[in-house]
Length: 413
Image (tube, rainbow, N blue to C red; front, side, top):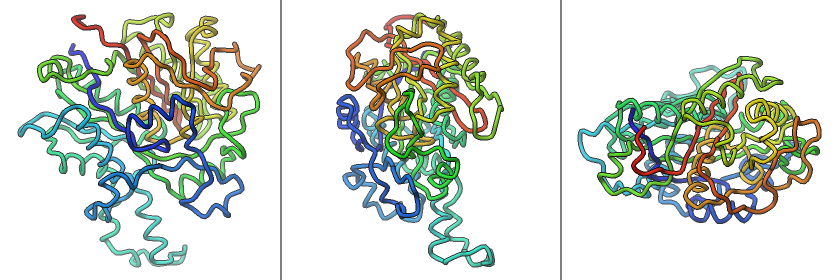
C-alpha cells in the first residue's frame, strides 16, 4: 500500500482566509462567533453566527465569473487555489491522474434561496416562475467539477453530501484512493456557506446556543452555525518526495460508519463513533494509548457531547483522563461540511508545530460524563504530538474518524 501525506493546506473561515492568520488567531483562543449579519437577526431568538471573515481580501470575492454560482463554489475555488499554491503546484501537468473530492451539507442551497427572494415565491407560485438559468448552477457536483475545470485536474471528481462529517469523508476517501494507487494526488476538503435553510433548521431543533458555545461544559446549551471551506492536498509519499514538497503530516487511517440511530440525534452510547475510532486505529496499526490528542466533534449540544464523551471513554478507558481533547467549534462554530475539513487543517498544523489548540468557554466538565477528561482550557498547549484522532459526526448517524500522524521518514507501510 502507498503512503499518503499532506502537502498543502488552506482555510476560508470565521478566523480568516489566510492559513497563518487563522492558526495564530486559533491558538490565541480568539473567537469568530458574533451576532448574525447575513440573515435578518431579528427573526431568530438566538442570533449568534460564525461568519467567514476576510473574504473581501481574496481574489475570488471580486471574480465576476463566480457570480452565478452558489457561495460554496466560490469558497471552494478560493480554498483550492490557496491549497495548491501552498503545496507548490503552480500548474498541473497535462494528462495527470489528480482528483478532487469535496464534502458538503447544504451544497448550493443558496441558489434556491436567491431564486425565492428574486421572484418573491410563495407556496402557491407555479414552478415555471423560476427560469432554468438559476437552477443550472444548483447541482452540488459543481463544488468539485468547477475545481477540476479551473485548475486542470484530469482524474476523479466527487462531491459528497454526508452532512457534518463530509469533510472527514472526503479526506478518508482521498486517502483510500491514493493508498490503493488510483490517484497520485487528490485535493480534498469541504465547503458550506451560510444558508437560511440550515440556520433555521438548527434553531427549530432548539440546538443553537443562547449565549456562547461551551463544548463538554456542564452548562453547555447548544451550538453556533458557522460557514467556510478548507482544502488539503493529499499526495502519495514518493510523488511528494520526488518533487521536493513540504510535508505537514501523514494520514495513517480512517473509518466511515453509520449507526442509523435517528435522523438528527446521536446514538446515546456513541455506537457508530466507537466503531469508527476503533476501525481507524486498527487501519493505522495504533492503540488508543498511542494517540496524543483528540480533535473532538464537540458541538456544545447536550446530546452530542455526552454521546461523544461516552464513545471516547469506551475506546480509551480511564486513559482518557490523560489524553488532551479540544473542540475548535468553541471558536469557529459548526461550519457544517467544512467543519471536519477545517479541523483536518488544524490537525496537520498541530503536528507540524507541536501545538494543540484550546477549547474556549469550557470551565467545568459535565459530571455526567464517564470521566473528567483533559479538555485543553483557554490557551494553546505545547506538546509532543505524534498521532491525532479527529472525529466528525453527522445527522443520520454518519460518523468518520481520521488518524493524522507526524511523518516518519523512511518508514515503509
